Amino acid sequence: MMLSQQDLKQLAQKGIAEQQIETQLGQFKTGFPFLKLEAAAAIGNGIFVPKDGERQKYVEAWQQYKAAGKKVVKFVPASGAASRMFKDMFAFVDADYDVPTTDFEKKFFDNIGKFAFYAELDAACQKNNGKSIQALVAEGNFKAVAANMLKAEGLNYGQLPKGLLLFHNYQEGPRTPMEEHLVEGALYAATNGEAHVHFTVSHEHMELFKQKVAQKVDFYAQKYGIHYDISFSEQKPSTDTIAANPDGTPFRNSDGSLLFRPGGHGALIENLNEIDADVIFVKNIDNVVPDRLKPETVLWKQIIAGVLVTLQQKAFEYLRLLDAGATDAQLQEMAEFVEKCLCTNPKGQKVDAAYLRTKLNRPMRVCGVVKNVGEPGGGPFLTYNQDGTVSLQILESSQIDKSNKEYMEMFTKGTHFNPVDLVCAVKDYKGNAFDLPKFVDPTTGFISQKSKSGKELQALELPGLWNGAMSNWSTVFVEVPLATFNPVKTVNDLLRDQHQ
Image 1 (cartoon, one colour):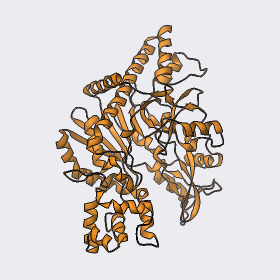
Image 2 (cartoon, helix red, strand yellow):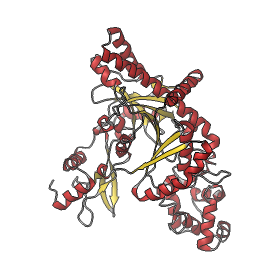
Image 3 (cartoon, one colour):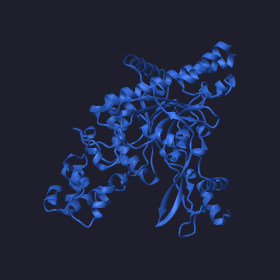
Image 4 (cartoon, rainbow, N blue to C red):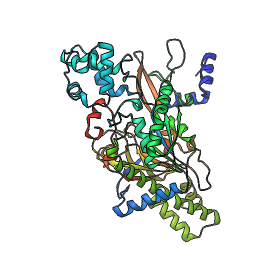
């Protein structure tokens, strides 16, 4: 492909190498290979369920680890705008009818008083329409209420990041998900009297996010008797991917410039890589519950962290043995640990000291998985790796060959799915940080169909943060209760018991 001077200038500004563009355009032409699956992970085959007695042991292991002064960071991907949450309400504002008609619209207005943002919305209605929500509803002006919620002159919820919407009601006033994450940080991730919380935020929301955090942080610091260290990052422009026309040529904007798109949450591996920590918790911004339901979340966060540090300790011990020169019996023991505890099957690979070192000396993650109740999302699988071994991975449906009946059956009958509930160990046994981009499987990206200004285009998603971007990590799945998973995909999800 021939790039103009203008194109090269555009690439330089973003920090993207010409070679990257060639590679990406090649990927549009060839597509990505489907993954080769062994089985859906299940209890006893890749999914661990700690018994009552063991749970306490893992909680204690985590408490001890924290007491040793290690640095723990809570990493919250929070760049999502809330617009998707309000898709139905945008449709209502633009509809050719004036009263709530769909089930969604009726549910929203029948329960409007239950939303944590009710008081702010009421104030916006009074300011902009001179009437309360009740008065507007009484005269049949439902659209004014919805418009005050969505539009910039009202609460602007249609454009704000999800992390800054009011989710839950409390005596002292309503709380945003950002605040709920600060509370969680205090409850299970604080060490040495300090909680480190990192938010990845989109560029246009950064200032607002920083202001809101600055307003709230002292209140929670006092409430929990700790100090907060809060940091932010944006998805790097260098991780944007080029968009292509349906024929695979670069898509150009009306001014002739190349169109780039954010590379999906897979780009966040770069942000994760810059965090200085021993252990990092990863959980999405909208998966939060009010305080009355937090004890279960906090308990299970400590359990999965305890599983992580227990496994890591063992792996470190074995790596030191390998350095010192391990006996055959010790190598045998390590091989069992890698296969049984780290769920990595050599599948005919020669299991020698060199093999064991590669499988032990890499980042490690423990992922909470929940019983499948029909929520969409990736699932836990035993998957073939580039080197022929089989290990645990979280897959998205786009990575599975839909024409393979056996694979589709595995996917549809999978007992568990991934709620994005990870705890990660990112330093090696000598205390050095792993270079996380080295553990990404670049063949696990995917291509999605989008449009811009009415024109069809193909978009390239980088290997997802918890999918291909962590493909070459040691991965362990632990079943966590469904009660720890309460995402908010639509505004009406806030009416579920768990959010009231």
